[in-house]
Amino acid sequence: MTLSMPPIPNLHAIAPEIIVLLTSLLVLLIDLIQLRGKKGGLAFLGAAGLALAGIFSYKLLQHPLATDIPGFAVDAYAQFFKIIFCLAGLMVIGISVRYLTLEGFSLGEYYSIILLAILGQMIMASGTHLLVIYVGLELMAISLYILAGFFKHHPKSNEAAVKYFLLGSFSSGIFLYGIMMAYGLTGSLDLSVIAGKVAGAELTGLLLLAVIMMGAGFAFKIAAVPFHFWTPDVYEGSPTSVTAFMSVGPKAAAFAALIRVFSSAFGTLRVEWTTLFICLSIATMVTGNLVALRQTNIKRMLAYSSIAHAGYLMVGFVAGGELGISSMLLYLRIYAFMNIGAFGVVILLNRVGGIGDRIDDFAGLSKVSRASAFVMLVFMLSLAGIPPTAGFAGKFYIFMAAVKNGYVWLAVIGVLNSAVSAYYYLRVIMRMYMVEPGDEPVLNVSTALSAILLIAVVGIIAIGIFPGFCLDLARTSVTSIL
Amino acid sequence: MTITLEHYILLGSLLFFVGMAGFLIRRNVFLMFMCIELMMNGVNICFVSFSHYYHNLSGQVFVLFVMTVAAAEAAVGLAIILTLYRNRETLNADEFRLMKH
Image (tube, rainbow over all chains, first blue to last red):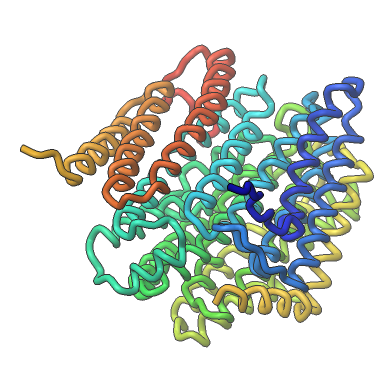
């Protein structure tokens, strides 16, 4: 009998994941031998790892490689999401460094855990097997529980962590039940096999239950109404840099897995789940925007705004097809720029002890620093979807896709909601430009933070004026899964 | 009476929904966490019985992963509950409303 090695899969195809994992471990290792207090180098190392992983993802997007890794797709679609995750992670690391030092929690573990959360998101985006998706989801979620409670002496941070942990694990329990039902009905965990079995079977209550349970699990992660109760409290209580991270990466990762699972495994049940997501989408947009109107805390307002944005994204999902999905991908990319940018300005105003979190703290910012007021203006206009910012281009393509695929009334509801949302974004702008400053705001300017804000503003304006490049990239990515 | 697949699934689902009800009814953070473990174990029973029914090992492999994830989750969750208890000296979920306006 001859012994032979099983063929080694093409490791080049999973280079981004390997780089992120190794960087994470390296950060943890160097943290042990480095002098305490000097963590800027670790942040730089983490950012460099993410940049490298992002470049590899971009190369793989341009030239997809065939791979024989079961349950793990290395298609252009996954790579597009991986670029978003790396970009979001890089920006978050940039806005974290000085903030963590000021708050007295400058620890190397922070960067390591951020990288692990990004690894989980990458696995979710690539998974074509329910086990892979589940493990990726949990890697991301458990890392985020730790990050939410990272300021361990702050009661608010503790409270955010415990709420996120309990409701997060509860929702993964529900998601798990959905997976179990799908396995029980089809005898397989592979999305393509499930798709074949589901296509041949008639619609039963149990199958519908599996779809609903899995949908609920994803809806929790993207913070869709009625699974949004955790969002405002967790966003408010977590460290601001973590909130910025939480509002973009996990949402994008959950959408990545949601699109893959629902359009491949449950593709034949399109009519049923479309109804479900239309309801979710309308409820999410309306609740998010209406409640955001009443908020006085900027982090809480951005939490409700992120709920509303999940609603807009679901409009694209309902519209479906190449148009709908590619507009979602484009929107997620833009959303990473504008949301992390907005949280970056919140960090800029942050003073130890939760000062700088109120919308009133923005009063007269333009008198204190014209540049920071201007970048906040760009982020708020983009979130509100006003041209020539990228937020407008993103919303435009989503609502166009809805109109072209026959959901005109849904697009109308979306546009009306977006008009309502302009009120609370413009309120921040009004505070900055029209109101006299109260007590002198102190700005925590640092090179990294300024660089990230600059990147975000340039990104928003560039995509806003020339959306073509990103949109083409999104279109080619989407064709790989449809 | 022979024990069939349905009995196992019924047992697993029952455990799951007992856990779910417990999570929604209980107000002690620690007991809520235990209820989540109950939900996961309910799902595990179903996975193993389906795996046996289909003569397909992937269900059992999934259970091993769920158990690993549950262990990791317990480690992180207990740490979070511990830091919370140190700062607040209570585990009653109703008292955690620092952020309600």
